[in-house]
Length: 448
Image 1 (spheres, rainbow, N blue to C red):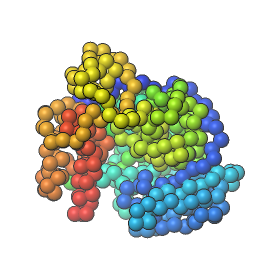
Image 2 (image 1 turned 90 degrees about the vertical axis):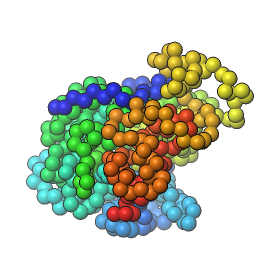
Image 3 (image 1 turned 180 degrees about the horizontal axis):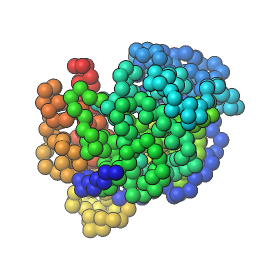
Image 4 (image 1 turned 30 degrees about the horizontal axis):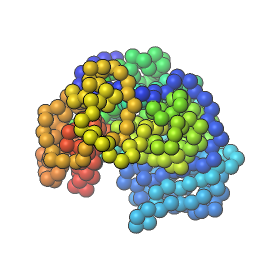
């Protein structure tokens, strides 16, 4: 077991963490599967508005790799296939009715262990669960061909108000082990499972993994950071990664022979009456989960956490890879003489406000950017929040000038947008590091 104590990073002290109690969500009225959640996906539709679907019915496939299926998390009627600019499919919305389900083959632990690599892949592909596995570099759905040198699972909950893995998996330890058994077939290398001091007890009995303990401020829980410290990606190598919840989802599929559409969410943020956990349905409409807990009408709803989540709304839907909803106050208009405020209740990494005198005080986040984008100032502070051997400013500048060779030397294959999210948070120039990193990743993919 490896123990990693990271010092670089920053924990944003925010109000609105979820209480450690799990409730059943109100009735789910609608769900959506969103092709925009899967980077680089070009969907080919298999349903249209008005079609009846069961839980596990095929909604669309990947045009480039038709073996990758995307199935419905609930039974009902397809309400709409929403398209955006250039008729790009944004989401498939399903009005939920009943619980009819497609049937797949179920497996015992011994039967799973006897599967070959091709059979294990076929189980995941046919069931629609292949997209739960992603790969580095490029942070996209794992390639079908070949196998990774290792698989990584992060159960370290370091992001702001992050959902706690042991609650997301409450009562699913057997299913989690079954999922691990299947994943171990897919790689000749190790399965690295990282936990924190708080979650390691839950995972201590899991076999077939190499358990690591990570501690320190965010982004210690990012899988990219853990890959960097455990087994770095070298040129030509690839690794796969998957969330603990998705491992248990694979296990539920194997045990029951049905598409596992149930999902536990953390409801967080200062604009909720009381944050807590709810058991709902994958891809649920936000209003079905949080409408009874909202304090007012001027909030920003985020699918995911405040650093890397996507802006949504009560009528929006939770992203495929997100385990939480965050609700924060929405800024309306500009603050009068905002630059003169003392900042007793203002979040900041910099010693600019009086709130730095009480660093442990949890504050309510807002959507205030405290200024607009301006000239890029290299402060030397960005490295303090990136616990990797990566120079954020140099890497971003190499991306902006399309210097492919320099991008490789500076570690573009090791990072994703989420790994430099704190750089955007602390940046006095309001530069979106994540957007720049994403541009670099897309450039490297095109270059092959």
